[in-house]
Amino acid sequence: MRLKENKVYIKAGITAFLVVAAGILCYFLIDKLDQVSSAWNKVTAILRPFIVGGALAYLLTPACNALDRFFQKCTRGRAEKTCKGFSIAISLIVTIAIVTLLTSILVPQVIRSLVSVVNALPGQINAARQQIDQWLADEPDLRQWWDRIFAQISSAITTWRETGLMPMVSSVLSGTASYVTGFAVAIKDVLLGLIVTIYLLAARKRFAAQARLTLNGICPDRWLPKVEEEVHFINHIFHGFLLGKLLDSAIIGVLCFLGCLVMGFPQAPLFGVVVGVTNIIPFVGPFIGAIPCALILLLANPVHCLMFVIFILILQQLDGNVIGPRIIGSSTGISGFWITFAILFFGGLWGLVGMLVAVPLFAVIYDIVRKLLFRRLRRKGHDQMIAAYETTYHPAPAPVKKIRRAKTETADPTEKTDQTEETGKTEEADKAEETDQKPESGR
Image 1: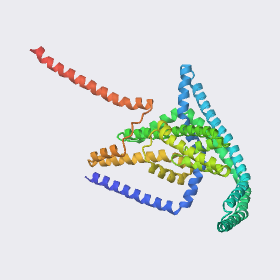
Image 2: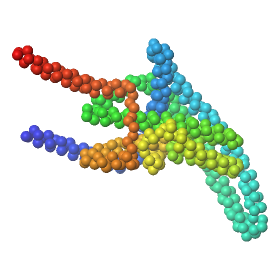
Image 3: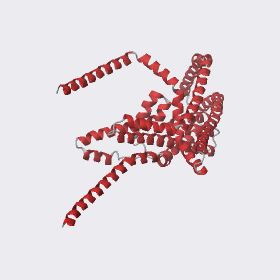
Image 4: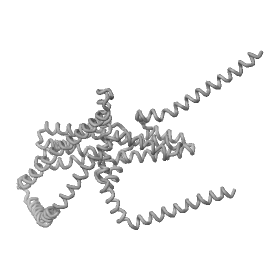
């Protein structure tokens, strides 16, 4: 009895200590928030090459696996290391070529468009003023009002050019050294990230086995199936959404380029790249990319701007109703409201990267909360409430297809238990038959 009481007291003391330590830690984090954030930024800056390399390796893993299987099939499994090296090299070369092609298209077109806008802006303003003067020739009152408004606008533009534009240009020129340093640091991070990507892709099977061993060693046996299922669901959501979104955005970019080319826009390559790249951001990305393109066309030709806006609306309807569902499907399982919330929240936290990973990350959080809540409701006996909700508002998602290796490893214990149960049943039946036969032989 004393031993049990001592154990209860020890557990209560450990719990109280952990609660007090957590409270002190929270107070320290809140009190030293600036120092903690600066330390966090420093750590993330150091680990940025590993983050870039890990993300790139995660995206290139399906392509490397497919190429590896193809090369091993061609060589009949005789040169495994060579096949692995070729698959990694081809994946990286294709990725670098695509990025280089998009950059070579985007940068000259952006510079050319900005120069043409700056050169055409004074002429457009004068033409608009002459047209308005012709319209208001017979209206002296409106003409006086327009002259007064135009004078105010001209003075505001002149003031902004002297007090706002020139200081901004001087600050940009004075900060050229910092921009060059930042660009050099970014190039360094990208190069180191490529090296990390090569190492991760070369040892991806070993890292997967180590992660599986770690998961089996840390998690209790009763939690292990649930944790494995959730890990496979996370992998399915991120891979399916990100790779599907990249393919969908590439198709939309090509269609936008072809449509702008047919309508005779001189900036067709620029518009195709901008709309395709921003289409990666779900729900709001197409509009983010269409706004600057429409402004460029508005300054050059308002009719072309109207045609482009109508074309983008039609293209986005085609993407949302035909192309997107066929490529991505309803893999996330969350509504448009939560998609908007996730993009705004994680975009505010992590910028462009947060917008890219917002939807799959929130889908994972949503799924975990949903499963925990449903488990609590089932314990309370509300199975009918869950069934009514799923059939009406949130149908249960399709089961996640696991990797073959994972299937074999997870299926083996169940198969073994089934086999042992069957063999046990057959042994019991044989023993029963033997016991039945013994009295007959005695008789």
